[in-house]
Image (cartoon, rainbow, N blue to C red; front, side):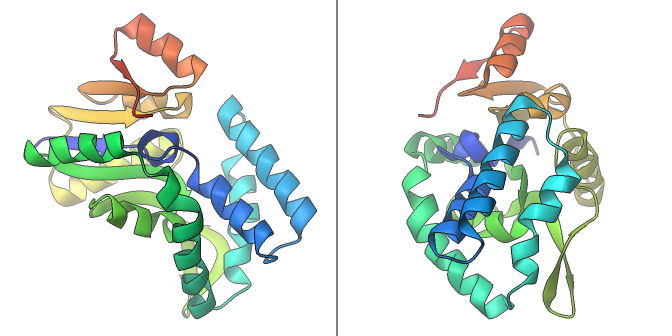
Length: 217
């Protein structure tokens, strides 16, 4: 079975779920507002520039998960989905996913954003397979640390290769849709790389390589 892989933030979504989670925490007084907002924005700019230290960012972004119990976190996540995510779900993205589903392809979201945030978003798109950065959990509480390899840059290739082995899949006749030059390592691995509302660096590479460039906006 062929495989259709989708980045999430700014690809299937018309925005960044990780950055929006930070905004949600600030707006609801769940973190130190001014400092957290400034750091959240700084890390987002570093991500776009390709200079993000993923472990430094994860120490920052996963810390709030460790400070609250799961019941509170899940309640806030439901509010977050309604307040921050549903408005950036792209109808054309839903159509694209559905076209691959109707073609009988296996569907997979692969995202650097952590699983706590992205699991209900993948469900919203009807995609059961999700590779995301995994927050560590011990005895029913998040620790604030990452478990395993972050799903970022070359880490996406590592995580996908492990998943392919586990599920007895391969990348023959595979698609990958992404907006970000951070995903170039994986885009170069698939049969059909597609740039979606891409940043300037990815747009330039796609043009050089003759990859399709599309918009879901």
